[in-house]
Length: 171
Image (cartoon, rainbow, N blue to C red; front, side, top):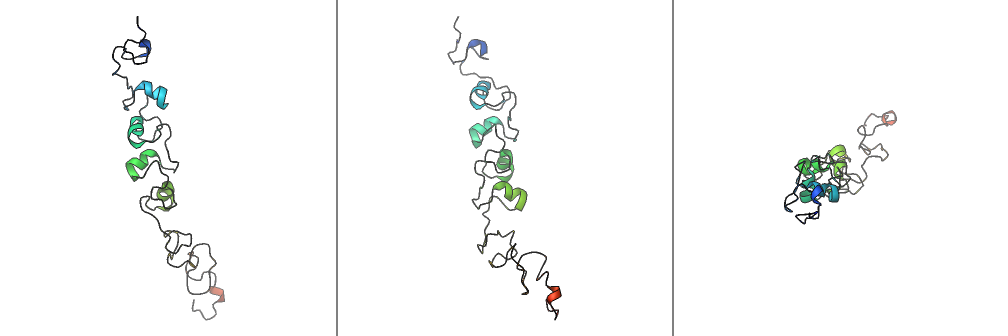
């Protein structure tokens, strides 16, 4: 007896369809043959979403080109499924809008849009959502507050800390 009747490279004893090379078993219905999941992709043929990122393994291989064994292919703190299904960001590029902030930081920390380039109008190193006056490079977080009627450091209002020095109470 021929050990591989359909000549598909899989011994008949291991082949779910030993007489038909075009047939394959996909136990988890993710679009990947069980044999390929085990031998090529290192995914679980019994789990349609091996990395639990809400994208089926077959979709990751054939559509998004993401890694079905890594839930965050671009390491930006957003799951591949969140990027593809919710935020519409590129799961292969950690900074979809190329503004220097990774997508996860924009979504989870700064609440800015990872699809829209965030600018620093005055080029002082602080983005618009961090800087209380993004048109003046002298006004930004972390600078020393001056007694000048301006909130220089973007903290607690104008001329904070100078009330005791203002003898004419004009500030």
